[in-house]
Image 1 (tube, helix red, strand yellow):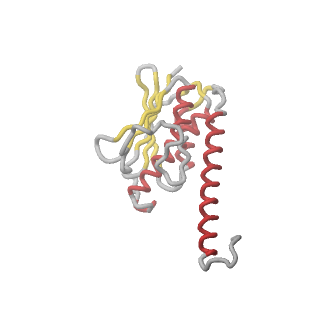
Image 2: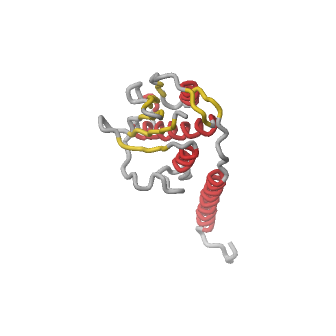
Image 3: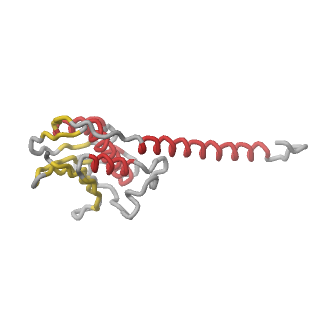
Length: 194
């Protein structure tokens, strides 16, 4: 812009340069927002929480693809409902994104069979909540819990890290693995019963 006379392609160069600056600024803003959220996770404020009701609330929040709740046993857990709800929202959102990837972004192509399923069961001393999808599965699970690593164009790379932090602060775990019966992934949240 400082050159006289201006080159013929100055407008295209300027727009391309400003577009690059805008993209980088957006990415930096997402990074800083994600980092701040990750660094400020408060300790859980535990209260007796009806797990099936919490799972139903999470399923009702997603409207892009059907989230089918498969009923399990009545379970009341001492947990921070807000934190665990956010954990499950993140897992369901990832599962829905995977289903949409598998259907080419067409939510109408996802049937109840190819939808996301939320289910839970009790086992010795803990409860396991599963988020099951029919997406493409995990190509490489090595970086799943690496901070700020993402495969999504607009992802921040903290969703699964936040899930892990919340689970561990409740004495639990989060794992992801490919399904063995078909394509897709199973996210498992294990929480102690007491």
